[in-house]
Image 1 (cartoon, rainbow, N blue to C red):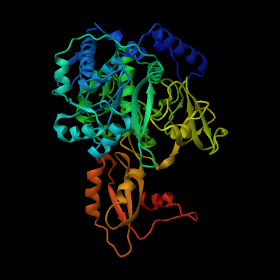
Image 2 (tube, rainbow, N blue to C red):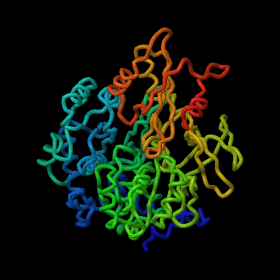
Image 3 (tube, rainbow, N blue to C red):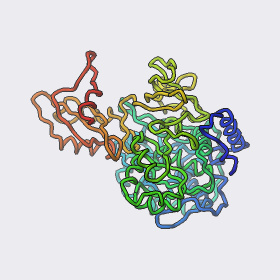
Image 4 (cartoon, rainbow, N blue to C red):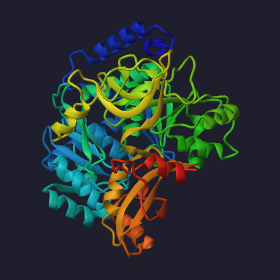
Length: 529
């Protein structure tokens, strides 16, 4: 096994792990003009090895992917995009959408992927706030997206698996592009994360943020060029793009590039794969299928779960069915990955494992004072993975990113005597449904505007498949009646489907404490069973 395979997570020798990973990073970062492109993409030029296995059986080689990225980089410059500009991308998962990420790295452009479920109203905010020079969207939604681009002063181009104006421009472009010089401190991507005030925040990620995390995870999870990753995650999200894809780019391995979660496709391709990354929903749905058994998974070496808590029952059922123990880890938009259960050693159900070797983690009280092991508090992390701050939000950045580099995650956790971290709750009432973050305040702002509604409260309630889903509690104006179906329709017009409440309850008032604050814990106790 090569040098990466010798990184031993959970062995107890953290100093040796850190030294080894830093050495690997120095070697890979030596004399680089554009560290992100030179680490992730440039080494694959000329390689005729498989990179993307597509559902129809077609294969895109590493070299073919690099040449396509160069064509797309030319297309971007043809649309007037310059170094340091942002491009907003709302495109269904396809090879060209992934190659656009590589093109941005090569051209020195900041990549902003956006959830394909976002409505035009939601999209307008992201495009305007980021100051995106170019909006790339689905040809099927061209009319509405053109309006969004026009209002934001951006250029609009189309792209999907079949083509589009950006694709057409790339088809006519050379297959090589002069890589733009950038430094590791330069921004590589924006990822927007919703806030409790209803205003989304643009997390700024540098080249070094992305490189460091990918290299660390590659070593800890023992990925090599021989691996084939089942990839059914979206690539507008950090999990599918900056964890799964970046790890495979660092190693030079291959991915089975599936457009979305489809149990039949996962089962069909699993005998050809060695690893899978997914959210808990992937694993619950696989367990619901009798074909998913020990024989099917005998060639797999690793199943990884993240983006939402995995129930201990799922751990047990999965191991009993397959003989594999799922590796759970913990990360977030602003930091990529922070902790992981070990590749070798005790993968403890219900925990998210140990801090990564180059990540410092502490559990603090409300004043930021570190608490003793075993006590519950707010998780704070510091490391090369931690973002550069929120775009155009210096006050918010100062609130959540301490002067000493520690980021206040807002998650409540506890660290045991062995260092294993358990996330016991989430500040800010965050709901994670099927791996997607939902912030109740964003829903409440829409609900409170509806006819007959005095106020609302949104909570997360358990769901067997998605982990949890939003439930909306509505209080009517005095003497008024709430048209629940009308409220549902209005929410559907304003918010992405995954954010919409699965259930609505109408009641006379909301429970409050003596300070007048809504007691969501009481609502969860009442409706969460």
